Length: 249
Length: 249
DNA sequence: AAGTGGTCTAGACCACTAT
DNA sequence: TAGTGGTCTAGACCACTTT
Image (spheres, rainbow over the protein chains, first blue to last red):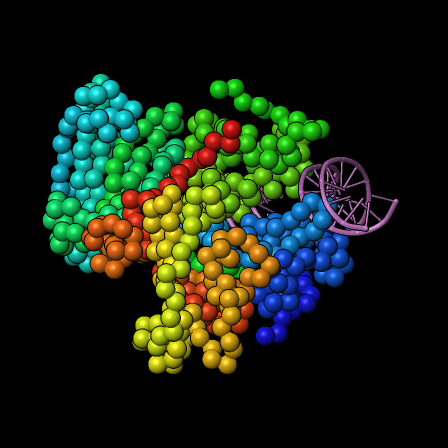
């Protein structure tokens, strides 16, 4: 592979991006190996005829991408791929919800129930407080693939209106809108096997593998709004990612 | 909560970090709500007495953190938390391997076998080629929690030496070292239930939930080196993360 | 035309590391 | 002390949106 050794002005990508790509190419080709020191920034300035700020910005991008790390006063060093740096994105998962042509959300149960200990703890409620239980199923191409079970805090002083339910509506969670009342959330993924009820809802057999994604959402005052779980058929969902240098072309 | 409205020079955090925190605080307090436009950068320059480059850098940090997004020529807008932005880190998982006090890796099987179709495809080998099969189990505090099954390409023209096995040794994967020969990898997580063999190795009962993390690692020439799976007891591993604004204090 | 985000410079200054 | 990373400025220029 041939790689560029200078930066094109006018109408090309920004200089700092071009420099990022040049350095990434050189690392990917093995010109700089893990542990090697890159040329000092002052030298990169001269070589590529850019200012120190531009070089700095390029290096910062490489640091963000965990391709290099720096030691002040010493140099910039190429990192090897590290397992601990790996992240999995929920984007694929989220895209299932956004594809309105193929997917449909059915609410099949809504009722007001008394929170059990676990729910009360998660929602920071007194034991015996009331919550709204919502059960939804997400259907893609006619097949149920995600079962969502959620409890919302129920404040008797305020009437429940549809808009209230919308607070954590699946649509609102995945598509940005101006009415979002959520500030933060905590999520955790665990491996599970389907219970009888879950298997029934998802139209599959009990004991099949599944992901359970538990969530608690909080409002602007950091008070819990809802607690629930997405139960996803394991044969429909898989999280993938890459480690190391992602090709930029 | 009281929040600062000016930037402290001398000995404090860098100006751009302080500005990031000021803006994050204001968003967290609801002064700017999702969909709102932040003050123009020129105004932030005047208000906080910093240069445009410094403001820009702060905004870039907020963009990276998915707290705001910008529309050129229009403004900088506060985002609400979005599911698609969520990522899960393998850091917790990786830390299990790094804790050398509590964890031990046992190789309990090494043999040369003929690659089946699936292995040959993943490793880009001709059908019937030979691979080295390695089975390891990771034990923490005496309990087996992760079972690692891996096939390395076997090149008869090169003798197999210990160093060769080290290429994808668990240690090398998790701790950065200068001998890393890997360039990239592909990883995917699936939900699974333990097979008979897996349950035996992990000392638990069949049909328990588990994560299976499949991996393919590639060398500098983008040729596959190894293919394998980590099988993790579901009751030992859980991936957690947060959504929205992370408190900076 | 005016306002807003986005890139870039040339150099200053500071903090840290190596020798 | 010399070299290296890290922050910051004051202003220039460009691309895009809004009015």
